[in-house]
Length: 195
Image (tube, rainbow, N blue to C red; front, top):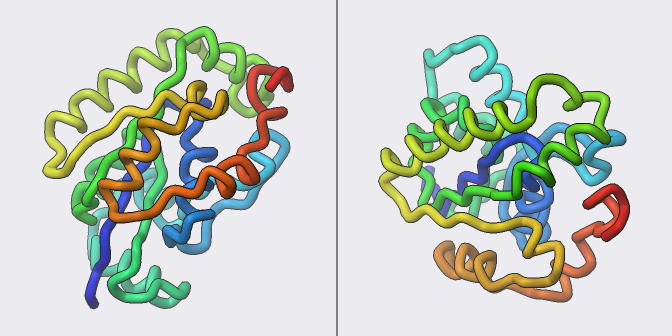
């Protein structure tokens, strides 16, 4: 199969990875059949159940061939852009997919803590410790990555500052449309509905 340019989006939970993955999806990046939205992420999580299952069960047999077979069965067009979004624990699997770009989502610890406090699903554990642990793993991944790595402040994206995001699009050879971004981003979901 002719595999096109690939994107890996990662970051601590509640750092804006779903929003960023949704933006790339809205611009034509293929993520496959992903986890649907709920009260915490109304527009969806953009995480693939197969990758979730592999990471949770620590199964590596038949990977990455199984991934490409599933993607093709779900409508992936060979040579087209593809994306994967998942936390840092997924790196051993994602690394084998050989993405062309890693995008790390970043938010302040206080913003992540506030988001976790508003969510029943994520309202457990010390947010500062969780973010520090995730950032440590992400820094190790970035050092191992054999592709460009860009950090995007998702709070800046919410404010309409697309500069770093545009660089990520350019690295993949994608054209960024601010109108699509403005339509996709639901600012009421951020900062407790304060926009």
